[in-house]
Length: 126
Image (tube, rainbow, N blue to C red; front, side, top):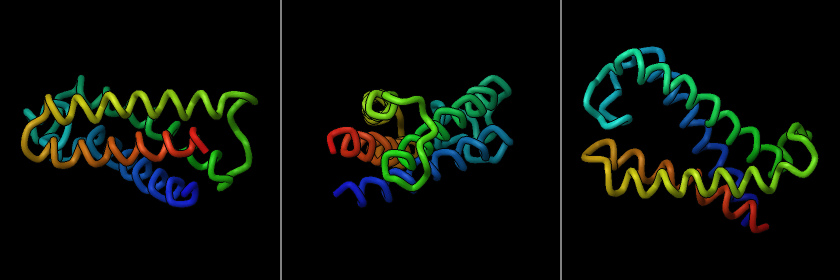
């Protein structure tokens, strides 16, 4: 089960990283994020996507370390709390996308957040 969680987490956080980079760069996919009001995000939301890239990279790093894909990078004792924190954060994201998003944003955001949260939860419990 841990191997599946690592693979799912790497794919999900990898996609989230690329997605947020594309949003920050001005790709016309804004309808899939941040309320879906604009195809190309305004400057403030593009900056928010840039910050989200850092969070997605943290998720990628944490899952990679938990799965033994990379040598430990996080300070000793931070891995499990980081997994729990990411699991909780993306669990909340599942709820906000489920109840706050519409249309394409919901169809994209709910599964992505669920995969991120679920992989971190599975790794935190293993």
